[in-house]
Image 1 (cartoon, rainbow, N blue to C red):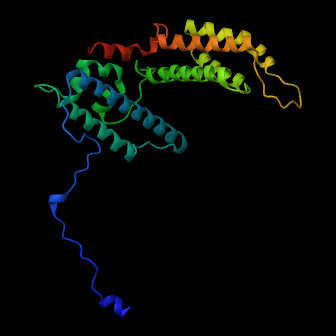
Image 2: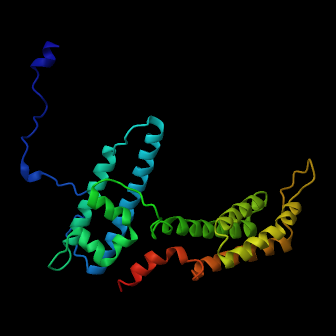
Image 3: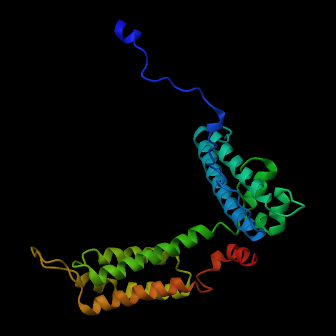
Length: 262
């Protein structure tokens, strides 16, 4: 131990020089970026949707706590921090606009975002998360587009599998998953027709996949059933990708906002 303590270090650390400091840019770009008024509006749309989702989650959490503990709910520190960060980013966005720069609440009113996201407007005024008695027009956007995307992906996968897989063991299960999504969109006429087609043919499809007990062969659909599944999935894919008026009704408020920017 004595030998170790008396031995000089192999090297000595240099003293810190502020010239080598690094600024960490987590919330902003490394290089200055100028946004046009249209880009600012799109960025604000994204930030409003983030804050709206955060508010809804906080309101739900507060409600659950109130039910369990019968106490006045408090905002979580995480919510306060994230909410403040989004508000900060919104104000940073406004700096890209030409003079005179509007206040944040005024800007949201002028461009129509306060009507799309009333929870955000109320949060900015009162400083606390409050839910709406009536569902705001933007609430349906993400759930609806999520279901359409799920329907598209499931149909593409099923179309690929029914044509190329050596075993059709899970085809009925995949078709059932598509049916469940269609069922959640049953008020849309083009998709209702496809849903009824599945209802009329599903039992026959399952029957054609039945194999004899003890057989080591993988279940295979006959050619006519393969053709029907492929035709059905192609119909779903083309219908979703068409984004017809019936399919986009729940998306209209946000789509109209974006289209008005150009």
